[in-house]
Image 1 (cartoon, rainbow, N blue to C red):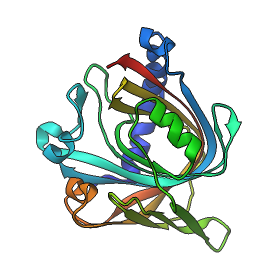
Image 2 (image 1 turned 60 degrees about the vertical axis):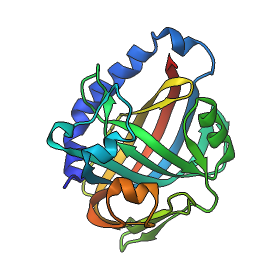
Image 3 (image 1 turned 135 degrees about the vertical axis):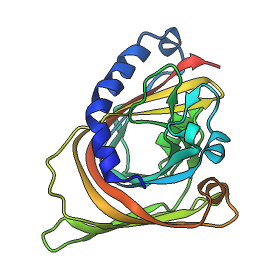
Length: 258
C-alpha cells in the first residue's frame, strides 16, 4: 500500500525536480504561443489516496512517452483526490470557491527523472471559468454540478473527518477520511501535472506551500460499470491516505504542440 509515508519521502526530491521542470518548460518555443498560460491560486483542503492497480489498466489511459513507475513489475498507482479551495483566482481574477475532483496516474515524461508527477485523466469542477480555461488548453476537464466537500471539527478545532462527493454522471465517486492528529510542521510540496490533449502536451507546475499533510484512513466508493471502476479494478476501497491543507499557486501551459 502507498500512503502518507510515500508522500513525505517524495517531498524533498520533488521540490528540486518540480522547480527544474518549471524552469525547463519556460524555454519551450511552444510555450510562448497561444493559448496563453493559465494561472490559478487558492487556499485549499483536499483528501488524497493512492490506489494500486494493474499496470496494463493504467497504461490504457496513459500515452506512450510517459513512464509509469512500477510498470515493469506490473503495478501502477492511481491518485484519487478532490477538495475545495477558498479565495480562488483564475488568471488573477477572483472566482467563487473552487471545488474539484481529480483522477490521475502517477507517471512522468520518459525523458525526465521521476518526481511528484501525475498524468491527469479526469478533472471535475462546477466552477465555469476554471472549466473553460482548462478546456481552452485542450485538457479533459469536466463540468460537474453538485460537487461537495465538508469537514467535521475535532475536539481542538482541527478537522477530524472529511467527505468528498463528486456526482459526475460518467463515473461518480465519493471519499471519506478519518483524519489523525496533525503533529507535523508546514511543508512545501511542489507537484507536476501532465496531460496529452488535442493541442499537445500540457504541463502544470504546482507550488504548494504552507502545507499540512495529515495521515488519514480513506474510504473510496465508485459506481460499478464505470470507467473509473474499471481502471481501479473495483468499487470499494479502504486504504491509508491523507488530508492536506495548503496554499496553492500553479501555472498550466501547452509545452509541445500536437
